[in-house]
Each structure stands twice: as C-alpha cells, then as structure tokens.
Image 1: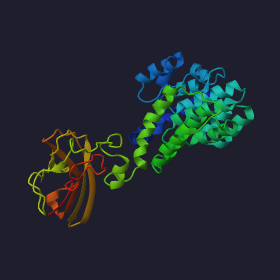
Image 2: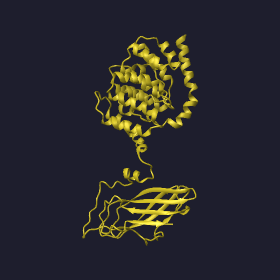
Image 3: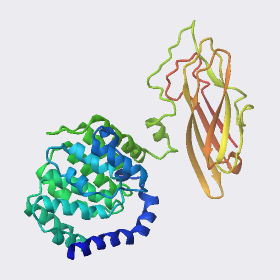
Image 4: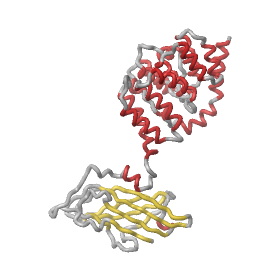
Amino acid sequence: MMKGYIQKKWFSVMLGMVIVQFSAFTLRADSPLTSCFFAPAYKDVAEVAQAMRGLELAEQGVLLDSITAHFLLREDVDLGTRMAVANAQGFGQLANIGVMLQAVARKHGSDAEEWLILAEAGEWMKLSEHCKNAGVQSQDLFVMAYLFAMADYTLPRPALPFLALAAKQMENHEVGHWISLLIASQMIMDTEPCRVYVMFEEAKQRSYDQSLWRPEGKMLILDYIALYELACLPDEYSEAYYRVRPVFDTTQVKQTYSPAKYVDLHFVGQVNDELPIAMHTDNRAEEGGYVVVEIKNGGNTHSIPTNVYCELRISTEQGEERLVRQAQVPGIAPRRTEIVSIFLPGIWWQSGSGTMELTLDQAAQIMESNETNNAVRLSQ
C-alpha cells in the first residue's frame, strides 16, 4: 500500500509543479542543462535511439521506464553512453526521480519506500547518505545527479548531494566532471554567465585520468556553451569590444605599399566641420539611425577588406551618449567607390548636437600612399 501511495504522490507532485515549470520554461528552457543535447553523438546505441524517438513525441521529457533505469545502472556500459541515455530522456519529468530511486534501491537491496519518503520530504542530504551506506558507486551517483537535475531543471538542488558524493570518489573523471559543470552552470547562469564559459574553457585544457566522452558529444556541448562567451566581452558598443571582436578580422590579412602598386582609401566629399556631401542619416523605423558613407579607393590596386570605425558622442536633453560602432568595408577596385552603411542602434544624428569621428582601417592592415585622409571628425 505504501508504495502505491508514494507513486501516486510523485505524480501529484509532478502535476502540482506544472504551472511553476511552464512559467520557468520561458526563462530557463534555453539553459546549460536543457540546451546541451549531446545524445545524437550516441544515436547508434539502441537505448539512446529509442529514447530520442520518444522525446520527439514528448512536449519536454520522456517518462523513465524501469528497463531504461536498469540500463542507466549497468556497470558494463561506459559512463558517457549512460549519460547520453539520460540526456535523451529530456527535461522536466519530475516523476523520473522516483523511478530512478526505486531502480537504485532494488540494485542495492535497500528499502525503496523509505528513500521515496525522504525524497518527498526534500531530505536530499539524508537520501545521499542512505545511498552511500548502501554502497552506491560513484558512476551511478553521477547518473542519479544528472537525471535529478534534468528532471527538476528549474532548481536542480536535489542533484547536489549526490554530485558531491560522486566527485569525492571520482575526482578526475572527464564525463563526471563535465556533468558536474553542466549542473553548476545551471545554478550560476543568471548571476555569473561569463563563469559558465570560463569553466568549460578550463575543462577543455584539463588532463583527465579517464576520458570517455565521444568527441562529437563534447562538441555538441561546447557549441552551446560558446554562447556564454558574449558575457565575457566588454560592452557591445565600446572600443574594447571591437578590439576583441572586430566586424571583419583583419589580423589574417595585410596589404603592403609600393610606388608601382598602391592603395588610397578615403571618404568621398569635402571634409570640414559640416557633414561630408556624401554622408547622411536615414532614420528607419524606431531602431536607430544609419550613417551612410561613400569610400573611394584612389589607388591603382584592389584593396583588401577592412573596417570603418565610428565613434559618436551626442548631447541630448537626457545627457551625453557615447556609441562606438564598426562596419566592414569590402575590398574596393582601383578608382571605384563603395557605399557602406553603419547602424547606430537607438541613436539618431538629428536628435541632438555632438561629434562623430570616422576612421578607416583602424588596425592599419593596409599600407597606403596617403595615410592622412583616413579619418574625419564631424560636428553638428
């Protein structure tokens, strides 16, 4: 009777969390735990393929069955493959915690009802101690921790005691460490997003005692984690940002000068305190302004691509705004002119007074016959 009651209770807990999960889903569905789908790297494994087919029909996660739970605890299967099966179950199925606990208890001859009661009461630390006393091995603990975190991805705290216990036994196991990082990333992604990226960059350089990830699986994880690199960059509209992430990377190209073959890039139009003739602002919709410039190559050699750098300081009733933008200048044929549009988000040149400085080829990758006409300072 007790077992049946607890199983019903687990389903009621799951249903009771539906509203909470849906509200959190919009915020956290794009997250380290839910977006790092590395199961396809193991799709040749029958158990992974079966779970992936089930996941295609499910809204979020697949309800774990006893056969799959038993597979997750098989010691003759490497940990990377077992994690792939757990990954293919998807996320958001709280009932999977109960199914997994019963499978682990059966494997070790323990009282599943007592473990489920502790889980319902949120006594995760006590439950992890029961697992330790029952002799649950570190790889099984890692699987439990990951499955628990995926089941309750909005707040994966139930996984932490099992994760800590497993890490003590397997300090330098690659699969275990990366799973630990995914769970840790879920906890800090809102407060320390840059740290998420840094942790995995450090993991890429680390030497492990055991490396059982398939390379394709690691790449699927890293492809998503790369998104967090943006959190490590300076403000998008700063000079420092474009030093790290230029619109066009000029570091791999360079153009030398000779009297016989030379380049001379310059802005078209008279340069003085007014706007050059060929420059204007085009305020489209409510997104911001576009500065359109004409750039000419007055030399006799085709130029390599480069960037035009724009720094705008504008005074409005709300105060001074400073904005830095960069746009790519394509390679320009001799005696030809190219039109380049520079987008200024949220800024309209007509909305106040200020100055604008434009610089061509700021990284100086093009040696020119005339280096003095690559910058203009405009005022309004």
